[in-house]
Image (tube, rainbow, N blue to C red):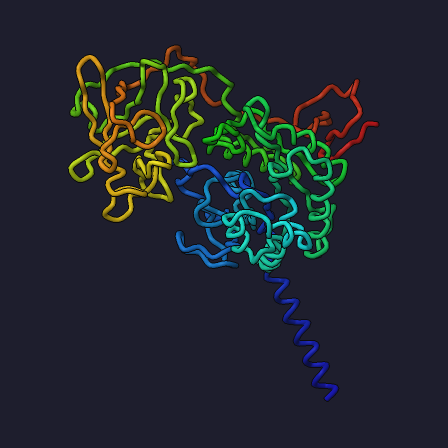
Length: 500
């Protein structure tokens, strides 16, 4: 009996040794968590759907139907990474930049658990139940996808990931729902310390990368939280702040600015990667944001016939009040002054016309020239119900609308000397602004192409190669004069230096 027990013990030890040996030391795993900006809030654009190096992998942390993915399995990291229905986020260009700068025998994997709208308390297991019970149903549904304990799911998936590779760091982007709360860094530390303990890691080997909120210069609603984020390295020694300055953001329907644009996510992801690579001894080139410009658009060609509209992208302007129609990332139609409407941070401000039954359809076109899509499919402008809004949503079966039959069908009519009117097939009423088509009298618009009032000639530039040769940098990676340093935390030779 004793021999049998010894043999069984040896076999168990051998199996554990073999399981550990299967983990590839050249498979770098990064854990990601946070709220909507980590989850991914921008619609992927054409460039984001191009080839992704299969060396960049994502571990599905929930089951997906479209694309078909199974929880706990690895896949090439095409967006959406977090769950179906989400968009481009921080992890996408983090991973793409990592593999582009690492040797070909190195893979990078992300384990991303994020919930739009969650406070940091959503990742503290003993607090999450009380926190969630008073929240809205949509939020409860998000949490239910993680069995109402996102931290537990993150650890569960991280342990699966450890069977394949080695955890190298943690990415966090969260704070909009805890804006300016002074105890936020301590709560982040509680989660970080638990991850280190529960996953058997060494804190000295696992950096935490914390991204800033949308900056004040970009109009960020929660930019004040960045001063709180700046204190995280004082609480967690092995942590680094990722600057958001210069990253474009987008305005919500209510005027708030919480989320980055697709371009903003690309830049932020690259910035996360640049710091992670720098800690690995690699100095990576990344895109710099375009310098802020005040591009102004003016009417180029006025279109006056249906034949001129077919196949062409055009703006819809009310010249009488200087306003124009445009789309938001919440799939809503919006109506504001032309300077606001013709902003490249919007989902789109051009339109294309198509045929729908006996009428016409209107599709939103992004600044890059792509048709704006809803859940991967082209969305039509819908009048919806009289009490609702006009939105870009998918036509439903034979209704070809959302709340009302033929809500997405429009009759455009041009009247000489006045302009175009849009009559809705479902309501029989006219469109005036971003509210449903409910007006008896037509509003006249100019359908036109646009031209830039003055060209800046500025294009995206790249940072030059450099070497870390004893210079001193602040936590945002900016070189500083080391002869007269103010109190704070600095980086020299990839190590932190505290000046008191």
